[in-house]
Image (cartoon, rainbow, N blue to C red; front, side):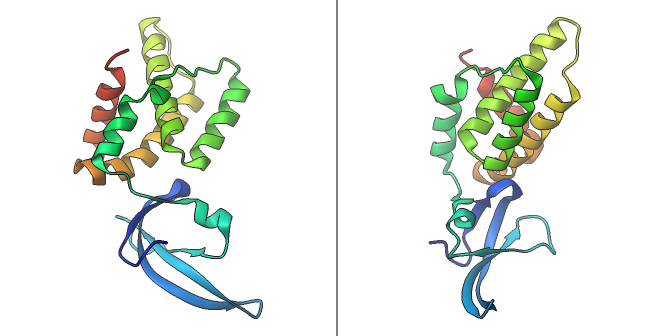
Length: 168
């Protein structure tokens, strides 16, 4: 279980700090909630019911630097996963963004980097939806990676691009 003060990744919301554990009465039942504040965004607060398994499954501990490096070098991330059917690609990428699965998100980012590069080499542009999915996935990943690596988000994006191009 997470403790007050822990930094966690919460679904598609990014890195949050556990700021409190609250008890509230909802429908005459006493419920316990973890109160989360997004890191770097004052004013917002998420309450996650600890008795709700689906909500708690969206909470993940932060990666260590070693785990991050291993993930970037893993074969799972390096697997080519371009989906030719645009509608299926949109649906799949939407689900990936909502899942918060780091490995699948990194695979998606790598795939979109490669596609963007091949499109540029052919004198074409990527579809706007692919650009948007890439931006959203990068945003999710860089919020955590910038804290783990001690880098600014722009540095993390360059770092990810370089690491994902290695050993192609």
